[in-house]
Length: 388
Image (cartoon, rainbow, N blue to C red):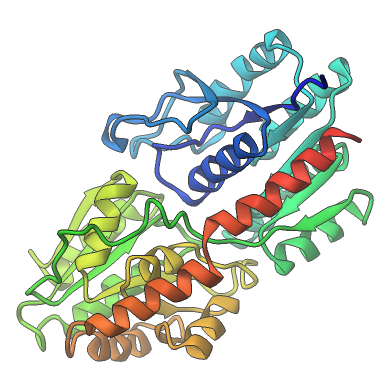
């Protein structure tokens, strides 16, 4: 009898830690296990606010302590090194896998390429984004961007296959690697098992807007704080809830206190179930993408988290997400501009979504943006890489 394929996933992010990458890899692990693979995950101990770990069936997760920033994130050179350094030894000592899956940052990809070369094991690079493009977009020094681009290209070019979430990311990867590695577009979506309306949830009586995700220069979530400051006086009971952390979070807290004191809440990082409950009861979920940051091709997954919970989305910024909101009537979309977004918020705060609209949004997301289909395509690509 042939031995099952052994897949080793190396990632600093994995459920219950919230975030698109964590949910994406959790879904991949479940899909691989469902195809009969033996799956082991080398990850980090999640922050306490993430909630208890409920690992997928037939998936073994090994968590290692890691340094986190003030917001509880594994983000920054020192934090990355605290994961990548031990990972080198963990990969060398792990039972020999058939294939390794790695996701950004490129430093982790570099560690995986080195170990896989030594052990003669193929690996798949799962690119939810292109780190060097993001760094350039937020104004990182050109010399550092050039170094990062070289490291990222080297990490990708050793892969048996690169998995990407969209056509835009594929174009960036092919430009970066000069077409020297197979690239498979697996798509993007949301874990509809996590993001779903709880049976006992009820729509908030107060007009409520919920943002759930990273608050950094790329997302540009500050546009919602600025816009809410313009409409707060017009809708006295309205409130804005901003889940998550990021480089702009402290500034946004200060700005919210200036523009709408007591009306904007910052609960910090929360588990998927808590965020799903908040989104399912909100009048609208929020998603944004700052223009001119080199990321205009991206899909903010948080827009699908909102619609999966049956809640329309207010989308601010460029990219395919904006066109999708308009084309499929998922909510309201416009330019990344405080005045324009204020008009969108006014429309969203007129009345709570009707039950029929919530059911339609949930059904649309299940059919078109569920992580299950994405994870299936990704699992097929990983198993294909194992035979390389």
